[in-house]
Length: 160
Image 1 (cartoon, rainbow, N blue to C red):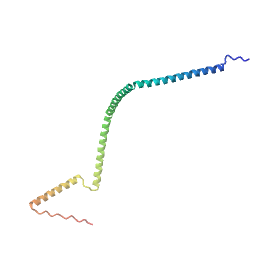
Image 2 (cartoon, rainbow, N blue to C red):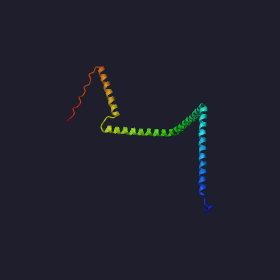
Image 3 (cartoon, rainbow, N blue to C red):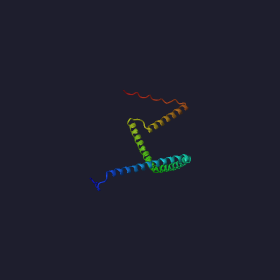
Image 4 (cartoon, rainbow, N blue to C red):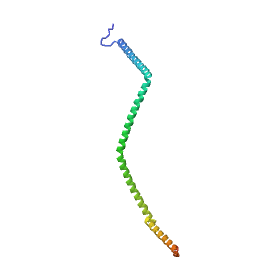
C-alpha cells in the first residue's frame, strides 16, 4: 500500500485548515459588522437623547469658527491692501504721467494741423476779440457824442 510521504502536506488536512480559517475570518467580519451596527444604534440613541444640547453646542462652535475665520480674513485683506497700496500708487502716478504726455502730444498735433490749415489759434482769437471790443467801444463813444459813424469799407470783391 501507499504510505503517505511525510514531506508532502496532506491535501485533506490543508483543505480542512483553509475552511476553518475562512470560517474564523467570516465570523470576525460578522462580529465587526455587528459592533459597527451597535455603535451606530448607540450614536443614534445618544443623539436623540442629547440632540438639542448637541445641536446647540455645534451652533456655538460654528459661531466661534466663523468669528475666527472672519477675523483671519479681515487681517489677510488688510495685509494684502497694505502690500498693494504702494504698487497701486506707483501705477497711478505712472499712468497719470503717461496720460499727461499723451494729452500734450495730442494737443501739439492738433495745433500743428490747425496751423497747416491756417486756422486761427488762441492768440489770434484773443487779438480779434480785443479789436472787436475796441471797435464796439469806439462806436458807443461816437453815438453818445452825436458823431456820425465812420464810413465802413465794403469788402473787396473776390477776383475770379
